[in-house]
Image 1 (cartoon, rainbow, N blue to C red):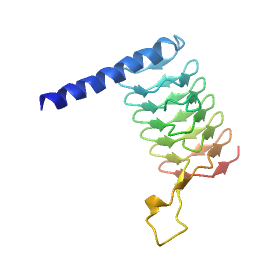
Image 2 (tube, helix red, strand yellow; image 1 turned 135 degrees about the vertical axis):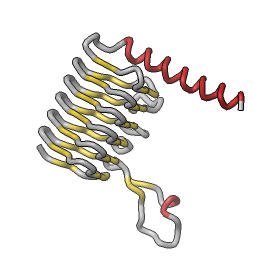
Image 3 (cartoon, rainbow, N blue to C red; image 1 turned 30 degrees about the vertical axis):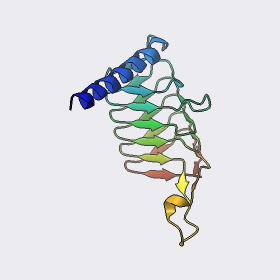
Image 4 (tube, helix red, strand yellow; image 1 turned 90 degrees about the vertical axis):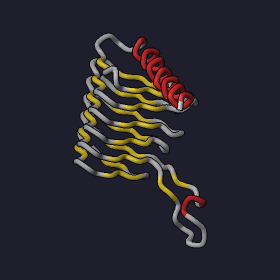
Length: 168
């Protein structure tokens, strides 16, 4: 019991320390709530962007795994963005609303002035399902990426899967 509590405290300490490392290099006009969490180093946030409560941004250790959020964006409460061997680029003047999830395995590029409503899922990878004689988990996955053009509205609860390109 004591060891588990100690490990939970250390995990929390490392998240807070990473929060400080990321935030100290941000422009002073960027607002990041204390309850937001960052895992990884390759996270870049543009001027006048607001990161709300309980947002989680996670990158791997590879330099190609990064999250780039443009200027004047708003990332709402509960949003989760993971690179998972890919990258996520969000343009300027975008909003990502509550509880949306972005997995950047194959790369996700979101243009300027994009609005993503609550509970949307953007997943840039997909399980292979060609064979029926072996389990899906053993067939690997594809990771073609997702592109969303400028001035797009993604409605509430929408799921965008690997390989999709949405024009402006």
